[in-house]
Every structure is written in C-alpha cells, then in structure tokens.
Image 1 (cartoon, rainbow, N blue to C red):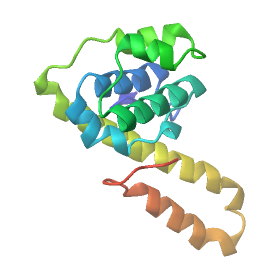
Image 2 (image 1 turned 135 degrees about the vertical axis):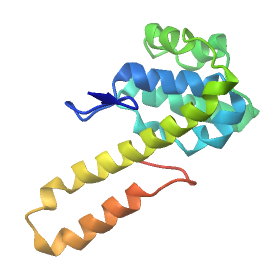
Image 3 (image 1 turned 90 degrees about the vertical axis):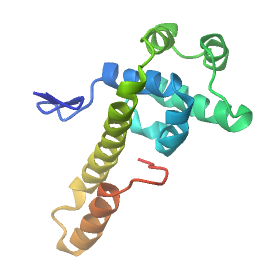
Image 4 (image 1 turned 180 degrees about the vertical axis):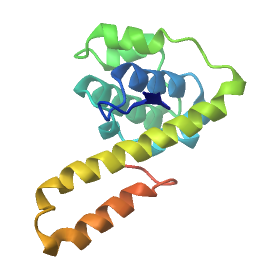
Length: 151
C-alpha cells in the first residue's frame, strides 16, 4: 500500500517519488525557499539525486535563483542525463497543488530522518545503556520542522 508516496511493504519512498519532489521544488521558487532549503541532499536514496540536489542548493545560495535545465546539465555532468530529464520532464504544478506538495515534502523529510535514526540505532538495541540515546535520537528526528533536516 502507498500512502503519501511511502510504500509500506518496502518501507521506502520510490525513486520516482523522490524525483517528483525535486521537480516540484524546481518549479516553484517560493516553495523551494519555504521547504526546499530545509531538505538535506542526504534525504535522497541515490547518489545521483543527492549530488543533483546539493548542486541545486549551491546554485541557489550563489545566485538566489533555481537552475534551468541547461544549467543543471552543466552543473551535473557526472550524473546520468536520464535522471535530469526525468526531473525536468514533470509538468509544472498548479497553485492549487502547491500546499499539498509542501505537506508531502515535509512528511518525506520527517520520514527519511526518522528512518535513518532508527536504522543507525538497530545495532545498539541490545545494549540497555544505549536506550536513552536511541530514544533521544528518534525523538529529535521525529519532530524537525523548521530547520535544515540532515540525515
């Protein structure tokens, strides 16, 4: 079952969904400023998407604008062109869907951070002395909303 992009059976967000998030953020500068800057490149599951998103953030920080398709090709010469084509090939969002996308991206950020915190804690579950540390790490990653989320 898929809920807000999350595939329950595999406990994962599909790569196609992750590309849609980037595409949505690239299509709306205001949305990128509101939530895109909170999103760490490490939230993405492939190296290509992580590098691509890091380059978007770097470009935005330098020029206060989002890169065009042509600029993205130049910035990401080592990334599979198909990845870039997929991201830029998605249609531009209507204003009515922007709020839904913002909520979905916030959910994605929280889920990816929580997933990473849990996975990093698995090896320490048998050590009772580490339980408070695990609990704090998971709690910290469960409620991040307004600051950069790094996983």
